[in-house]
Length: 352
Image (cartoon, rainbow, N blue to C red; front, side, top):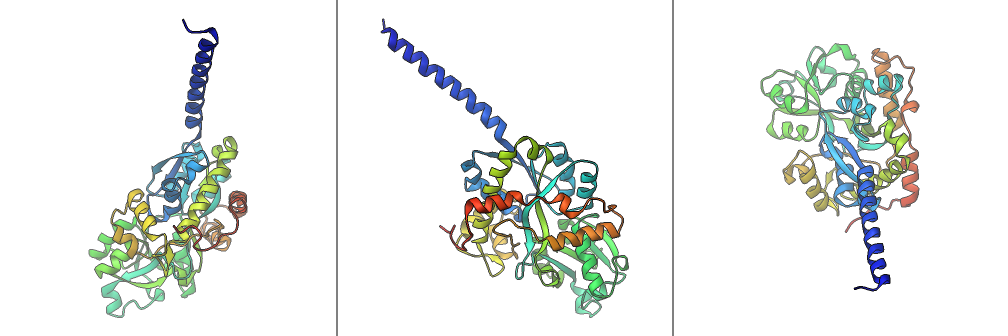
């Protein structure tokens, strides 16, 4: 028969093991976060943070949920079904906040920095070749496609038209998802479009369309997409909200180190392309290398001027009443704290 102290020790170790296992199980369940994405290449930092183990470093685990658009993500963010979301800003965001659903824009996700115009205004090649369309000012009365109504793309198109002496109502607005724009160009169902990568490159390479202007030329640093926090996440998991941002900003820096001359061609390129091929809906590595890449601020900061421009368009077109301002939906405290924790960004420091 084993000595009493040995038996007690075995029971003590067993109890600790069971308690630890139960504790870890509860901890893992409590800290698994749901992250809404559209599965695009512009979700790169969200994917990199998972693939490189940055979430794990913060004691977090994420589950990605794919949506067709950020606008369709808003209800899930509002209910807390999704903790973190990403995509374009929309009138729906401001209207949700007005109803007391305090979704916050917390970080950059994708911008059109100079040389990184992953959005562009295109026109049908036959219309360009014939001289019927030479620039944006020739789009009057034309069928112009955008992916959806009520989002920031409409404001970008409005800006382009206004700058060319036209108004938003001077075009025949057509709302088509980006992949559907390819077929619409082929059957001459549209004359022009505001399109993002990788559809832009596919249209240009096929010869179906030609570029009129890159959005980076039109509105440098235009804040096309952002990261959102749900009100439930902010309220119930404030520490995890901070930890998530540390992982995300670290991933933004890793992604930024992979950029060179408008493409994923820097020191980290092979790793980033591999991650994007695995996580995004683009499964051809060559496509990731060929497209014009979006830029992202290595500290996660936002271009507030473009967000203000979008808000003004939503207000002018009476999609929002203007009572909820841009500052009411933005909270930069998370990126500020994350940047301080990670230290000053040095280009190339993450390359390995």
